[in-house]
Length: 416
Image 1 (tube, rainbow, N blue to C red):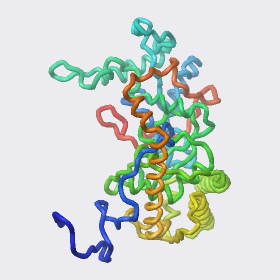
Image 2 (image 1 turned 180 degrees about the vertical axis):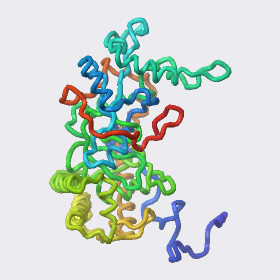
Image 3 (image 1 turned 30 degrees about the vertical axis):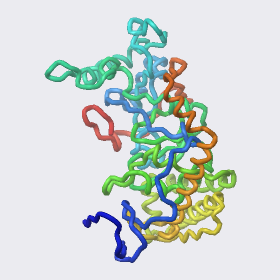
Image 4 (image 1 turned 45 degrees about the vertical axis):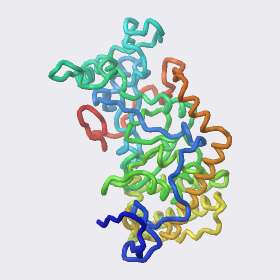
């Protein structure tokens, strides 16, 4: 590693090639400079899933089935629980586990806030499920250090029957959607797919309150992909750590996306057909997609559709002059079927310039000043007692996969 103070007056060489400069990310600097800004237009559309903070809430499908068979009322607090393993590794992408969810309810009437009582329902109204949480969650949440202080921060010990972070804004945002786009936060391949809104989503997922084929076309395109890899953090060989704030809220969407609806739905339908026919998940599907030795007709068609999708997205931006040059290219993530390095740099340049333009327009409209004014005021309490998570149509859970805890690692009771 070389360090130099002052203006560098010598040549720049990157990957043994002469270049006009080198950024801190070890890339060639583009024409647009500076950092991207978060856009008001993208607010309240992307969320991390719920931080449950204890395996005691989690049930196998047969356990949830038995609880509902015992008392159908229990289905009010039992939900399919989707994690990254379910999303990316199974062909049906069905949640392999269920989870108990008491939302933000008081434990019982005695534990209700006397100054601002919420009233029923209470967690105690569901004694079968509360007994499980009391046995498996409470000891972990209320454990103490040697000095007698609680090991976990307030209010986790005091409100041991509810999640560490319930994500009410997420479930409000998707309550009226027929489907939502979901992606794993940690992944070697950034992949979005449609899921049902009635699930409880693991914190290992990012959920977009978007449900159109055009939304999938934009977010699954190479245009968004290169933006995300450039602006989000990475973890050694583990891939990208997608951040909703850095990858999505800064991303300038095309002004019009109606032209992308057909290609988005076509791409999605064909990809689902591949998964069902091959009985393989998203990760294996895209491993084939990026493997130059795989010339199977269904994978070749997916590549052709991806080219069409990228071309349509570029056209939606008005970038008909941009040569994307799809092929198998060497990237920092390895060999990928994607756009060329020249196209990647141009895409980043144009997106950053567009981000700055959109931000300036929002500032001129006073949108960011309004945000600052809102932050100075007192936070508004969410109305209603229950987070609007919709229940599945069936009265009881359908076992959809057995066994493992998926990709989650348990560290001191947290699901990672």
